[in-house]
Amino acid sequence: MQVTVHAAKTNLSKLIEAVLAGEEVVIAKGKQPMVKIVPFPRSRFKIGVLKDQITGPGPNFFEPMDDAELALWEGSDE
Image (cartoon, rainbow, N blue to C red):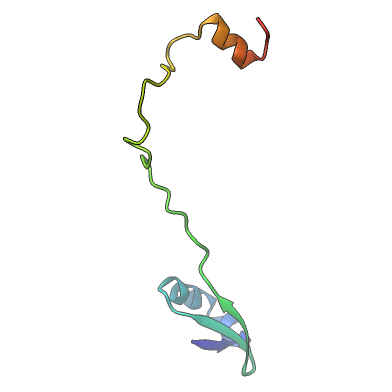
């Protein structure tokens, strides 16, 4: 669909809905196409995406670190 700048200002909400529904919307100045409205890409973040992909004995985050590990984290040379 192609609309004029005036029509785009008047119907912006409807044009956004049309774009989000998959329609191509072009805004023209007179009959000359100037810009196209495109949806902003949505990230498809999925919780648990790495589930079952990370294996092995991981650190137990609830156990205190030994002195050597603690020194590494603190940046000291003990």
